[in-house]
Length: 194
Image (cartoon, rainbow, N blue to C red; front, side, top):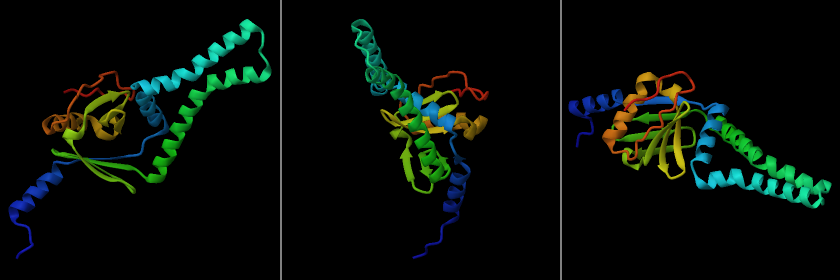
């Protein structure tokens, strides 16, 4: 049996390679902060994690002021409640950025069937139908594959024509819920159109 590819297989393989959108990038700490902030504010769990401790601190402060029982350690608890959520958020941003640096640059390849993510530790393929929704937020393109999990691609990595090309492939491939938040792009590039 002959294992050499036929000329039609070679031309099909070449057209698939030419048809790929390849992207390689390393996210900055500011991009990680925007991404994690968007994920936090887009879920009830994330909003509650930001609101719970400050609200409890304010209630405790009101009780301490009203009763006059404010000792040093009680006021320290109020202070802790006010700074806990922002501190944890900044720690998560730093941890995500450091992990991404150790992992190396993200490499994405998009074609008509879906996306392929690969770096030093990950090699994943997803069909467009697995993408539940696509959002655009402050210079980031978010491809959700679960309710609160998304691929995050900076628009700077896609270039001007890559965004429209990628969205056309996603629509043709059956990605659901493509509802772009067409907020102005912070980096000055134009917002995607579909």
